[in-house]
Length: 277
Image (cartoon, rainbow, N blue to C red; front, side, top):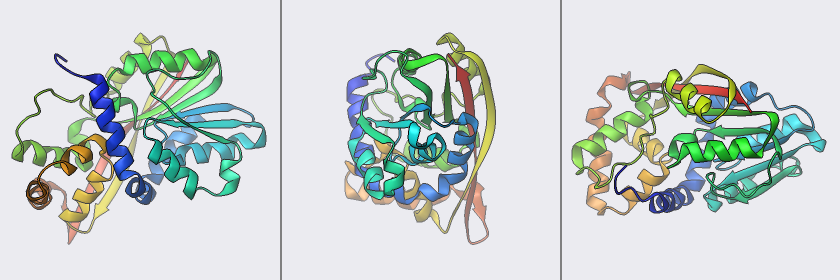
């Protein structure tokens, strides 16, 4: 994208996810089914070495530690150090015994070649300015035959959890001077498979997964969106207070297709992928 400043973008994402770290962790139970689907697809084995990229508060990493046992190792990595700290403070000691935390940029991983049996990326690949660079780094640190398991949001029309909030923002605010990468850009199976194949991965398998979320009212929905959207949450937090309040009020109009009784229900599509080096 012309004029796009990748380092500034990453700094904003880091600040945003550091800002929402505690609330992101608090809302994790709503995404438990998705986390379970990804860890089942990855299928960590006892003794394996695992790298979890975009680990956030380390919940997927914690599930992996239970699978690898005392002879394995899980490295939880994220660009936002406050997210990692939240996970470290919240997890029980038995989950931390075989876990290492590393604040790192996924596009320049600080690990030696052929180091990990499995890499996982839960809802993180689409955030990266240069996903091809990140996939090349993942391939570099995987052992021969090693696995990459990841999840991404589906197409915009199939992810009302995010798309209705984005529609409200686009309706009320001027467009950004430089477009941001879309969080839906890998939501089609063919696109995701092509990205992984072009990055040199073999035997790429994709599958759909549904994430259902219910909200008591529009304010509940808006807060849930902010608790997921690191960079967007950071940008909105910098707006005048009156503008932020108007966004929170006006999103009720965009949410009407999700009306369900006294509240709102969103049925969201997530795409899972498993690939081998």
